Image (cartoon, rainbow, N blue to C red; front, side, top):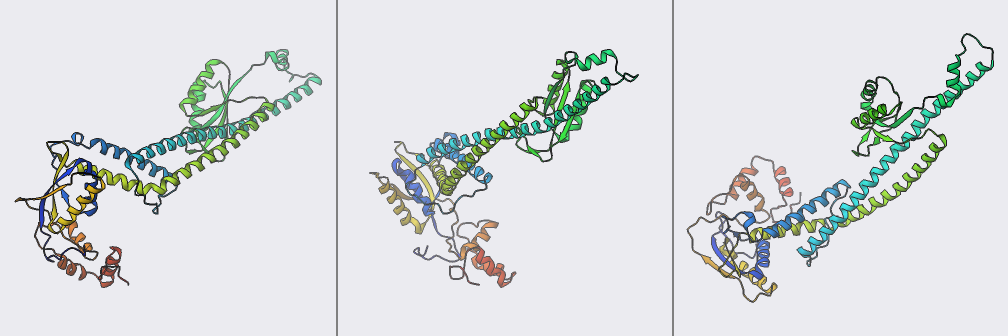
Length: 443
């Protein structure tokens, strides 16, 4: 702004309405240069059209899809505890088409990694619960077998001695000694949330009319539920039953209470073998999950290093295409016609920006810049520097004045300095990045 001519301190800049006729091949580059210049306000010449009827609706849709992918990457980085790097290398040769392909590949790879990690983590949690069931239910069966062995020894001692009135009848002796005449009970084992354990046991008793035996054991530490992925306090249960009808009722009740069932055997030898196999699988899954998480972290670090640059490019391109949608085609469909406001002093800068766009795009026809005569009220533009911009932002927060009205910077200075201390005003200038000499003040 130092190269621009001086202006009246108490008035906004004189504005002019300008028409630009830009060839199609240099339109994108021209809007880019004008956006970097920041001295041209476009008018919407397609106000009667909906966003879907405009020329560059498909490009804006592409930019929106890329912005969605970038938001997905951001969510994954926050979830992993990573942050985007602010020191990414600025590569000037980055292209929107190449970026679109790259973002699609990264999203597909990240989704595949997440799906695999989720599947492996669920299997790992299921094996952890299965190991708990094997240990707790094994304690049930071991205790029951020890109790049965003690009762058998006591019966044999009583049977070898003299008969008394307390000796069992002949039928009872045959049922105890003959395994073929004993009743074979089935059982179901698994885990149920601890907060539902009392209701689970009560419903089980009522549904089967008390014809089941339910044993529960408390798991000391909370376990990760394979379905929800949240830590839940649970109890291991073993339900003994007789008959298929009772089994069907038990399975339905388990499903309704969200109880996870796991197979179990009453053979002690098979129990130890199953525990060993489950422990080995857990170790292998842990190694695989750690490797997957490391790969995911490296991929997110790579994305985070370029994230800010990609986000800025997508945002910039979307703004460019939104501006292009405000332009109208001429009758030949080879040029775009635009109208807008600019300060009078910026005419040469705008023409130079259009000329650079023509050269960069190798266009054979240059853009046409012409001033239009109008009676419309122009927009307000105040030229500011590092010092005056902070006060102008305060004024703009209350509203913009009409064109050619007074620039109330001096009144702002008086009204905002007097009510506050000098130290507070200096701190405000530091935070806003302004200083008396145009730089940062030293306190």
